[in-house]
Image 1 (tube, rainbow, N blue to C red):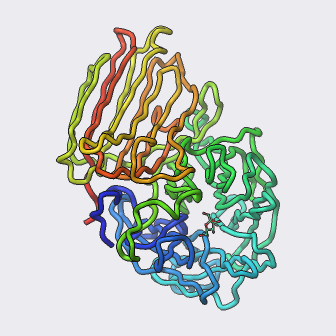
Image 2 (image 1 turned 30 degrees about the horizontal axis):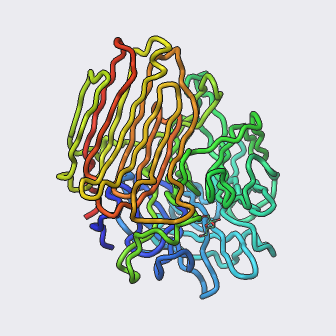
Image 3 (image 1 turned 30 degrees about the vertical axis):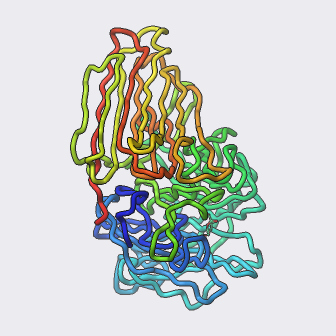
Length: 497
Ligand code: FRU
């Protein structure tokens, strides 16, 4: 793959060539290497011909592309989305001589049906053998897919969540051995249904500020099409899970992200709820993913789609919204290269950064305001803009201290598409009692991710300028005199050669 192109992300994962969609099979192996598989069409720059592409990383930023891990069995078959687990105790019987066997659980798609199949790996997930007696969950339906399997310690069983997309149902199955699966319950018509449910995840998370050891379970469901903003979006529900049934705490529907490019995310297998959970999400949207201008003319010229950076997650009680999923860029400091600008007492003022010399074209920035004292500070705002000095194209965004946050990708000209909405915004979450307000973000050639108050809200958006963005303007305005703004802008190291 050629990772040098002007729209190629430098700290985000993208496939060497061809088309990528959902992250699949994410697990950390016994030696600490992270494995990312993904829906992959190696033969065209549009969706189809689904394989499991594969990449590995020690730090979730520097990825090594690996050989394709799972191939379709014939021309009309697709290896659709799914998950992977480590079968430490050889519950499956595939691994008499090792305790680090890997089992992939995925959907086989044919024109006749979608079934759940498995494949096992003796070599840490680099090569897989399909189980001789597949499928492990047969079906006559063309709408039954995306199994995500976890180990449920209290019941000592494997648990699968899997979508019945057009029935708006998530099936919960259990198994002692990854082969024999028993249906336990269904979660039906929860939240916004869209046209179909896809890619469920069920994950236990710690509650920040709760009692020691307090956890809840989060059920995430991707819906497509039918998102309020159009196309694809991910919603989540917080509740409890006893090994067979998921019961939401309330009927609130919440979204993982407030822009349009965060879909079909998956959580790494095997991370305990005493740690922050880790997800990677497909940074695109089915509305326009097959048309974005990163493909080049021939297969091999280009690529389509990037993943979000790895995100850390936990739950936190927010005074106005109640419990919410926190989502922050994991270990972003590990790819910080050098400080381009820093001011620890900016006040109401502006910082300009010319980053035309930054080879990666990728930046991380933060603006933190503390000491907001009076209601006048609710007029305060933090705004940022990334510009192309050559063309004047720009991406901008910002947040009012009163709580609103927005992102505008409509001023870049490299892609015109009726569904490529220009501007996103999300209303009010200010917490007066704290007197502080923060925004941070990562911009990486053709993708931006922003985070409010260390991840109480996030947005992921792709954009396609005709000429590279190379100037940043960061402005703080309207805050009270005793408030302190500190801002920093750093270049990021290109992780691709
Ligand atoms: C979600 C999805 C999944 C399916 C896969 C096919 O984006 O539609 O439901 O398994 O993509 O590539």
